[in-house]
Image 1 (cartoon, rainbow, N blue to C red):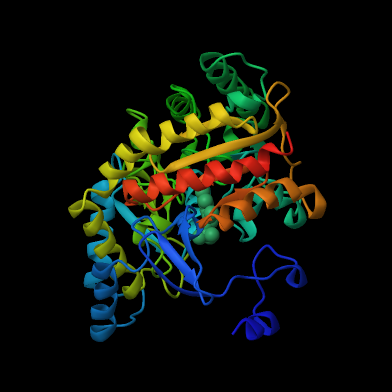
Image 2 (cartoon, rainbow, N blue to C red):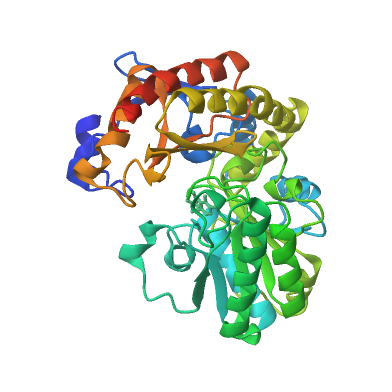
Length: 439
Ligand code: PMP
């Protein structure tokens, strides 16, 4: 099986000859295992999507039942699984985000949200943050600020990037959160003014940036962005592909920021724990109205696929019935957050601990004073050795870690048990010794 993988599977984001993908034999709950009998606690939730863990029996049963009755049907028809999924999602999104456009994943959601914003405003540009990830299709990769964009950047027609707040590595040299918030908002307003407000269709932000480092914005920032959008007639798109559906201990990350409601909200991943590919855009009343009498010029063959929607209905019901969102909040506050802060006290390689709910990052550094990252941006080969050593040590202790540049993200399933969370923290403790060796 591994031989066929090496011969025929072309893997994402990889130099094909330099990787040895682990052959996975099975998965359940917060764990997966290989054919050699090694079992791993999954602190990555796949790619931050198995919010209710692997193989939840109720979701598996719902997919089986849907497959037995109606495996597939084209998007133009009204289907029970699709309308029920849309209803359950719309009930949970904030404000009047009451219409749902379904896609097959996050990048397609971003593509369609920005297209809707351009059509709605008749303006060409979209503003996005440098420290961001929005997907790997043509428009989504250009909106992405993360260095993974570089090889694919087409010169970014129609995209203007700005700095969102991040106190630990403040682009504004701020000394505290209030200052960072104020300066970031001034910078954004200046960017809008010099680009020309009448040329800007949308501002897209991850409510809490994920891939780029899990950086909850300072209090007041998102409300300030909302205010700027209102003042200049700009559509606010909040990308909750990673942060949505319980990940942060609320249904949506924006629920942490009182009174803030975007015009469009993108989601994917946790909506059905990734059991079948699904994403979408939740659309405000005003933008829906734009397409009430004229057609929306976009669509996807598998939009609102019944298997994916049945999985979403079952997942959302499991999350509600089993109190998964509240569990994620409590575990973040009582176990993971305090546990990570305690590790930071003992391990000199930990520069900062950030996060909320089941959405945390440890920023690893060579030097706490200078904050020099443990590895450089976009590390390759030997340059990545310290993070590779950290990851290997974690795996040796039965933990599968999320590693991105100089960070490890702690993003286990939102329903992880307290016992497993503590076991994961103990494994991280051991693995951080390997990172400390490079301080
Ligand atoms: N937006 C955000 C915030 C994401 O985290 C991701 C995926 N990590 C995407 C968009 C792209 O989603 P997908 O990989 O499903 O296309």
